[in-house]
Length: 139
Image 1 (cartoon, rainbow, N blue to C red):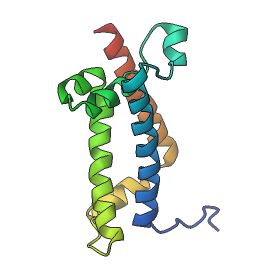
Image 2: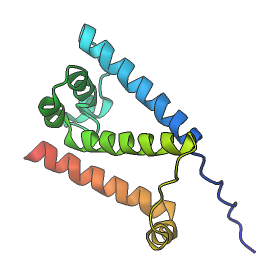
Image 3: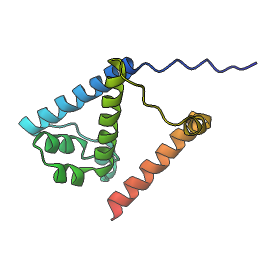
Image 4: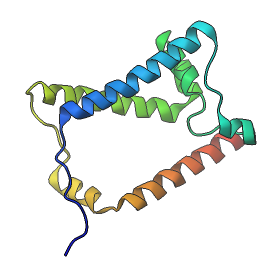
């Protein structure tokens, strides 16, 4: 007998709404910083002196609001790439929510990704973030 709850089906409109909420927060924070120079302090940086994986995100957002893609990339390239991926997903999900075609990974790739347990994804993410922090602060 399986103890796992059945997975909820993906709803594109829900994904778009969640992305819109995250985008609204990011744009608001970036606009506040661009207008006043006031941003959120990083507790990790305050405690260690090192930049965390998200450090530079507010300055990146401010640079994007000013159309400066080069400066945005310099502040935090990983976050910028993540924003591009989220923007592409937002467009695809919006098209789907409006009745367009659903774009999905090939079945074989999706099945392989689903087999990886959430704990492993978390550990991979933490390992990637740790490598990024060490490289960004020591190089």
